[in-house]
Image (cartoon, rainbow, N blue to C red; front, side, top):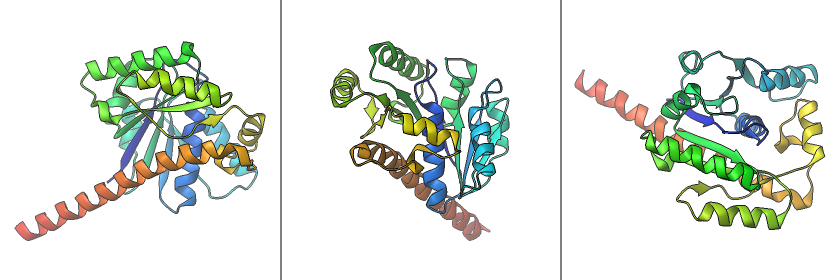
Length: 229
């Protein structure tokens, strides 16, 4: 059974595609099947990134495809893999389609109130649309320092939404890594950037747990059908 992770946001430039690439790379490095669906036909940021990755001969190769609709992305997914839906910025019908299809909805946000406030508003709207609150998770991205991270966590702490451990710091080295076709997790390591390892590990653990649970559920369903047959 496929696990679907949706990356959404109210605003652009908060780190959706950064997280999509990082999660995809980590899952692929772990030897698991993963596909990233780039749902922004105007920019196709992740599609272009994967092209650069291929030109530079980076491994492992990643399955990145552009889709015009969520339905198309879901129709093309294979068994026993992770499907990452990277949505365009701003709320649209596509955001709701992703939320309904996803096992986890991850929304990155910077530490700015200008980004945090609309992020919480979007999650409120999804809850009002009957999306289970436990599927909604925030991830801190483009963080400028410990003080900003602490303030962002305090702001989120006033809500009932989960926020992942760790954060993605704002680093020129990460932009340079993307220019080479690398994920931020593949960039040259810096001792003080262990927040990014915490964040991606926390996200990977959630995804892997879901993948194992769905695989077990699929096997049990198959055994039940065989027993009835």
